[in-house]
Structures are given as structure tokens and as C-alpha cells.
Image 1 (spheres, rainbow, N blue to C red):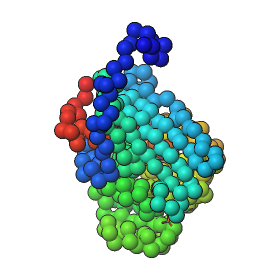
Image 2: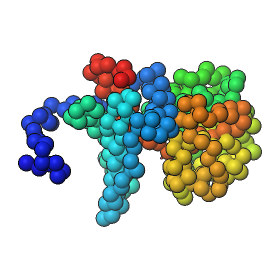
Image 3: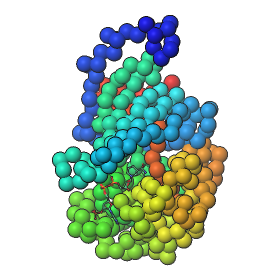
Image 4: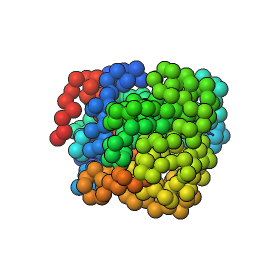
Length: 330
Ligand code: NDP
């Protein structure tokens, strides 16, 4: 029998044991995946990613299959971390026509494989992992880039990422005040009441004198103006993932030192960077690895676009926690 042109390999289909592969759902992920574990795992993954071949990260470009007759798209994001012994692929479908139907617009699923032998270990709900790993990456950036004496946190947006960022950013700093602004004010009020922060009627009011700001909205046009932001603040810019979308005033982008998760993604995919014609100073992983300065008392932006390697290490952590297996590094 031949398999991908390698005649010497005899494929043992029975060994795949597909009927016993566990599914790990959203609630189980929330129960086991703590920022205490996730933030250091992401910190290492970001540093490994920015260390080239020495970092042992393999992360090919995302591939995309358009489903034109439904206006949908099917994306696959595979990755491998040698240092965390993680191997996984996230598949994401985006079907905008699902709005106001029982099916979510964005549905993500992670297939986790055993990095030692290639066997499938688990299928893991991907939206929850995405929310937690994205916030954890921002928390890592904030740990390195927030100004000394950080006291005030402002969150613009009140959706899934807003809640995840509130938790993750609270893990790295103790804030004396947390403010939230949202396009729909009632949702900001509900968010503030539920999670113990202050709802603001305008974004300007929310970010006044803020040390750390998270922009976590679905906007395509700037919601944060440069003159509202104090010098030295750190901004985690998480929304506006396409070249024609912006969350930030271009003047603010040009005035700031920009760090990205991936420089390549930021210069090719981020409208905030592209439209402002701004330069990316470096990757946050280079800062973690000690190769680049954290210019923490200047105004800084962490432009997050998300990476497969973040899903890989988070999924591996979830599996190890659920199954009580070792998370120790090789
Ligand atoms: P949600 O749908 O849960 O929340 C969206 C939020 O954006 C809501 O607060 C909504 O306000 C607000 N919003 C939507 N449109 C506008 C607008 N035109 N102007 C101002 N506010 C608006 O989404 P998520 O929290 O999951 O995602 C937020 C952003 O993060 C998205 O842009 C998403 O693409 C991005 N993202 C980035 C990732 C990364 O790795 N960098 C990973 C995952 C998501 P309202 O309540 O009024 O509707």
C-alpha cells in the first residue's frame, strides 16, 4: 500500500481509533484553562515564534476555501510547537448569512494531534480557546509594555473579547479603576454591573488618563482618537483584522511604538498599520526573548491579529488539564 508516495509506510487504519476521540467543549475549557497557566505558555510561544528556526515553531500561512454560493469561508490554521510539544490545526468557518439564525457566524474547532506519533488526541471547541488565548497574548504584551505605576484600565467594546481581556489584564495588573465603553451603552452598563467596573457614555471619557486600553470591537472605522490618549499609555488593538478596517486614529498609530504578534501579519493584514502608513517596531516575542527593547514609557500599541501557534499551545494545555497529563516542557 502507498501513502502520500511513501511505499514503505503501511497504514494501520485501525490504530486511529476515531470512535474514542474525546470532544472538549466550551464549559470544560473554561473550567480548566486558567490565565495562570495560559499566560506563561503564550509568553513562551510568542518568544519561540519570533526566534526563527531556533524557536521550533512551524506555522504555515492560513489557507482559505471560499464557499461562494453561501458567502462563506472555511479557514485552516495548522501549527507545531517543538518546545511545548503541541501539534494542532484550527478550522474556522465564517458564514455571515448565519446572522439571526441558530448557527453562529464564526465557528471554530481545533483538532489536537499527539506531537510524538501524530495520532489524534482530541477535538476541542475553538471559539472559547480563541477568546482566552487572544486575551492572554494581550496580557503578555501588557506585562512588558504598560507604563510603570499602571492604575487605570479602559476597555472599548463589551463582547466576548472584552470579558476575556478584563480577566486576563486583571491577572497582570491590579487596577484602581476599570472603565468600559460600548457602542450600545446598555451593554456597557450590563457588563460593568456584572464584572465590577464603570460604564462610560463616551470612549473619550473611558480612556481619559488610562494607562492600559484594550480596543476589542467589530468596528471598521476608528473609535479611538489620538488626542484622548495620554502619552505613555499602552493599547492592545485586537479588532479590525482586515487591511481595510481600522480601530485607531492613524495619528495615534503613527505617534506610537508598534509591536505586533507577527510583523508579517501586521504589515499585510492590519488596516490600522497599512492605512496609517506606520512602521512596525518589532514583535512582542522579540521583547520577551530579550532581543528588542520594551519602550514602556512611550505610547505603545500591541497589534494583535492572532496566530495558529497560540491555538496550539492553548489546546495542548486544555487537553493536559482535562486528562491530568503532564504539561512539562520537553
Ligand atoms: P463580539 O461580537 O462578542 O463583540 C463585538 C463588540 O464590538 C461589541 O461590543 C459591539 O458592540 C462592538 N461593535 C461592533 N461593531 C461596532 C462598530 N461599528 N462600532 C463600535 N463598536 C462595534 O466580538 P468579539 O469580542 O469576539 O471580537 C471583537 C473583535 O476582536 C473583532 O473585531 C474580532 O475580529 C477581533 N478578534 C481578534 C482576534 C485576534 O486574535 N486578534 C481573535 C478573535 C477576535 P455592540 O454591543 O454595540 O454590538
